[in-house]
Each structure stands twice: as C-alpha cells, then as structure tokens.
Amino acid sequence: CEFTPIPPEEFESVPIKGNGAVRSFYVTLKTREMLYPRAALAGSEDEVGGVLAASPEIEVLEGAAVMEYPYSRARDETSYRRPRGFLGKIVYIRDPCLAEDGGEPNYEWPCATRSPVSEAQRRSVKPTLEPTTRTGAPSPGPSGSPTLVPSDGPTRTSEQSVRTASNYMLSLADTSARAFGNLFDVRTLPGASTVVVTGLEIYSSSTGVVEYEVYTRDGTWEGTEGDLSSFALIASGTLESTGKCGGNGFVHGKVSTEICEFTPIP
Image 1: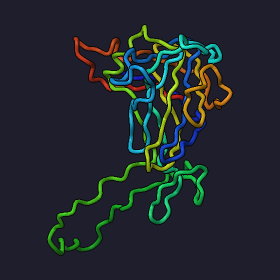
Image 2 (image 1 turned 45 degrees about the horizontal axis):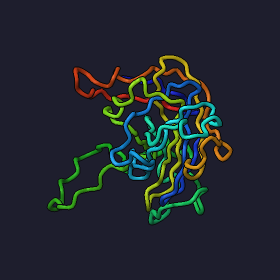
Image 3 (image 1 turned 30 degrees about the horizontal axis):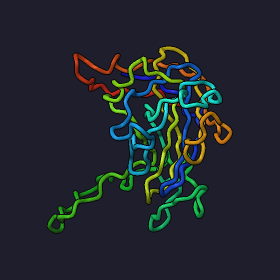
Image 4 (image 1 turned 90 degrees about the horizontal axis):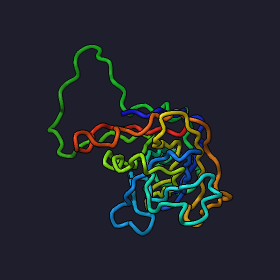
C-alpha cells in the first residue's frame, strides 16, 4: 500500500548533536486521525523511553499519544496515552559536517572546524572509482594470488532514514486507536556524530485533506505537558492522506507482508 508523499521543502531541518544528545518532536493533526499502536513495547508498559527503532546513528524512543488539540489543552494525564510509539519515519543526514583527515566524529552544531555539507555537495557525490574505457590491447591478468581479506562494502549514503513500525505494529494501529498527535524523543547513539533531521513521515486514518503541525525542542518532551513555549514550529500545512495501510493489517488471518509507505511531512 502507498501513502501520499508531502513536499520536503516545507520542513525546516533541525540538528541533533552527537554522542547521546536528545531532540524531541511533537507531531499533530488538527483532527483526531493520527494512528498509534494500542500496545506498548514489551517491558515498557509503565514508562516511556523504550527504543522503538534504531539505526547506526540514532534511536527513536517510545513516547505518548496526545488526545487533545491544541496542545495547551493537554495538561492532565487523561490527555495522554503513554507509553505509545510514533508510527512513521524519520529522514536525516548522517555526519553533516565534511569529514577531515582521520574522519573524527563531530558531536557539535554548528560544525566547529568545518562547513556543513550543502544540498549541492550531497547531490554531487560520485563513486570513488570511475569506469574505464578500453583502448588498445587488453590489460594483463592479475599479477599475483588473490588475497583472503575482503574488500570494503559499499559506502552508506549521507541521507538515511529510520522506519519506526513493522507491518505487525501497523496492524496494532486499528482505526479506533486515534489521537491528535504524538510526542517522542530521538537520541543519537554514544559515539555517533551529529545528524540533521530533514523530514518526517506520518500515519493517519484520514482518506482526505488533513492539517498538520510539527514542533521540536532540544531535550526530552517530558515535563512540557500542555506547554509549547519551549518548542519551535518547523512545519505546518495540509496534506492529502490516503488512510490506513492494508485494512486491519491482516490478510486471511496472517500479518500482511506488504511494504507500507508513510506520508512524509514536507
């Protein structure tokens, strides 16, 4: 199944400093159509902060579903379902500062000693080896015995993403488990460099136009309940949502194996 993409130019990129720093996100609709899983992660039934999904650079932590809009109305415990996971995807640039000799990790932002990678630079990255054109006689065969040491694998691109939900988790997000929004933290791993979040994708029950807002702050969202004063608005607008993926997430009594797409926040 497919979800409707949102133009990424409407999303204001934000950094998460390296080596264990935390940035929180509040993603909300103006209607109660944000889907969330009814069940918490195993072992995290009583508290938030379990690792929902991870990559070599970041961890997405379990947070809370917000049952009110606007956020100023969500001041008591009945306004939240916690812990609950964010269903969607986080798109980011890993190691956004140009590497120096030695490739030392960069934990700060802005970059202390080098310029951030620009969009033009990211698009201009080419493979290390260019194909050669044969001219004249063919080159001689190998000059020696093959080595036993494997060659390096393909280099990871600068743009990465973390999907927070398997199709099984999507099956838990039935259409009655709806909230206005979701709060969650994203944390860099110990020793990982700073990253820059360049987009989000969300999961909604709506099959029409919805209005959305995305806020963020340095540090965890916990303790901010009902108060947006420390958050910054980084995206807002409307999007055409195509609704829940795969009906109830099951096909003939089994979990669907379809690859579902989320709706990106521009």
